Image 1 (cartoon, rainbow over the protein chains, first blue to last red):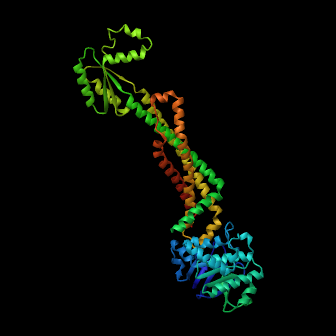
Image 2 (cartoon, rainbow over the protein chains, first blue to last red; image 1 turned 45 degrees about the vertical axis):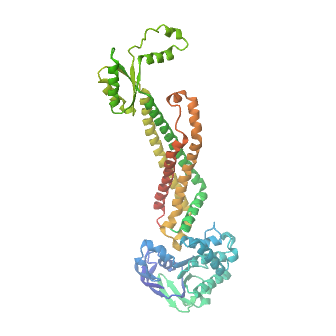
Image 3 (cartoon, rainbow over the protein chains, first blue to last red; image 1 turned 30 degrees about the horizontal axis):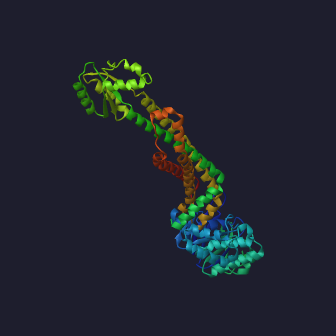
Amino acid sequence: MIDLDHVSKSYEKGQPAVNDITLHVNKGEFVFVVGESGSGKSTLIKLLLHELAPTSGQITVNDHVLSTLRHKDIPKYRREIGVVFQDFRLLNDRNVYENVAFAQHVVETPGRKIRKRVPEVLQMVGLAEKYRSLPRQLSGGEQQRVAVARAIVNRPALLLADEPTGNLDPRNSLDIMNLLQKINDNGTTVLVVTHNRELVDMFHKRVITMRRGIIASDVEEGKYHEA
Amino acid sequence: MRPSSLFYNIKQGFKNIWRNRMFSMASIATMSACILLFSIFFSILINVNYMIRTLEEEVGVSVLFDEGTSEERIKEIGTEIEKLDHVTSIAYTSPEEAWASFCEEYFEGNEELAESFRSDNPLEYSASYTVHVDEIENQDAVVARIEKIEGVRKINQSASAVSTLTAFNTLMTYGSIAIIAVLLVVAVFLISNTVSIGISVRRHEIAIMKYIGATDAFVRAPFIVEGILLGAIGAAIPLAVVYFAYDRLVGILLARFDILSTISSSLPDSMVVFRILLPIGLILGVGIGLFGSIITVRKHLSV
């Protein structure tokens, strides 16, 4: 699903944010990426989203070689990836249903399919009852569930989550992680960037630890402290 | 783009206008002012043109003959004039008709004065042809040709009113083009400004759209729709005002200013003006909106 072959990314100043990383993630895997601030985790997400281009090396995601993607093919590529952020990034002037439907409108899904799919996804994330609520009327955990619903409504092959529990209490964090596990069980590859030591240790998944732009360790069923 | 997406983007365009309603209102007001001025100038130009055409039809050239010219020769002269280019009609006035017309005009109420001339027509040598030409610009050329015909003594030309109107029309055309051009630039600027504010307000939403996989066209479409709507609404308002006010205004002008009714008993009605003004006004409004939004989207929305 994800192949990074000697990938580096340097910004104008300082040392490379990502330095000669080689990484392979299989289809259907659940992977944690951990590391301190500035270790290159966010740059990795941006590279996978093709928001940034690597300075050197090659990235292949779901059979797309990103360096050969034409500008007009980028939207099509991004439709195969769902993304969840720490700050939810919901549209505050739209209710839960509209926030999720928005993702389908954007990829030009016909109206009747939207009307069928959105309630299904809201049911899955446990927000079927709150479809008319505005984001400000929801708790942090509920807002993140809306963001997850929006990320998966277009059935992506890969789900990227950048600190999805960063703004949540332990109880809601666990709920979100369970939700991501459920999505992974349905066949979606999930890559979670996190600082949350307890959750990483609890889930016994593959843990990739980054430090100063390199992969310091990559352990199957690893734990946070092994980094 | 799918019909459902098109509908979605049109809805978003309306929402953009509502979200930035103050700026939208400023854009619509400027556009309305621009199209209203355009409509006023356009209506004036059409009316002045109409008057010129009416005058061209009414203002003829009087051709008088040398003393003692026989009736036969006068008929020949008439045939020669008829053959000239640009001559649309020719009417003969006999000395008797000329005297009768003079009496009607100058001795009204004093018919006894005219009686003293009963046996003697002072206008004995005032037989004439009244010649009409197709366009006023051709009158001088026709007069020059008639002057060369043997037996023609004098030609009375009265085209000064027409010339004044033609000059006024030209001045109006240039003046209105200049004013409208300035207003168009202002309208484009304001629409562009409104759209760019809409883009900055929706920056967050645009970023999410890009992450989800929106195409360039999909991201840009609501802003283009917004520009078109601002232009169309801005054009529709003054066009509606002109439509309802035009006939009433023409009626008032004709009643107030006698000069107008002496030039022309009627002026073109609103339908005549609107058949041309409506499509031009709408195309202008929509075109400005489209242009303003496209340049802004290209500048601020490199997706």
